[in-house]
Length: 132
Image (cartoon, rainbow, N blue to C red; front, side, top):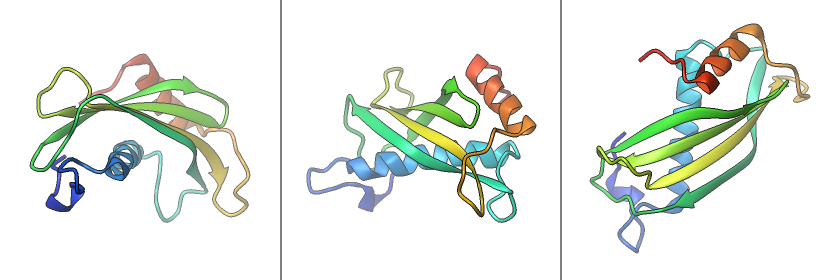
């Protein structure tokens, strides 16, 4: 992902809120690519119930950011993702974030168990079995 000019703040580095936007893009992009989520017709959707980030080094425009994604914990209706953001080809994360998603019914917003496809995709991500 490429950073944008307006991602920088007055301190000349990427504003902390942009890290969360990238986390959201990585997680939901993966769910869309794997067919787990259809933005318009999935009977259930994932809601973020917790998020956090630890910052280790600055990212700034015009950096290119690579992201790593893993499942840290898989529950009945929830999943905890960990997302690492890396500058260019860096081997140390510039930031490490986490999201906890809860699978809920689209209409009632009540938690529901993960479907078979979602569970399979997320178990593979948890085990590190992901095809490029």
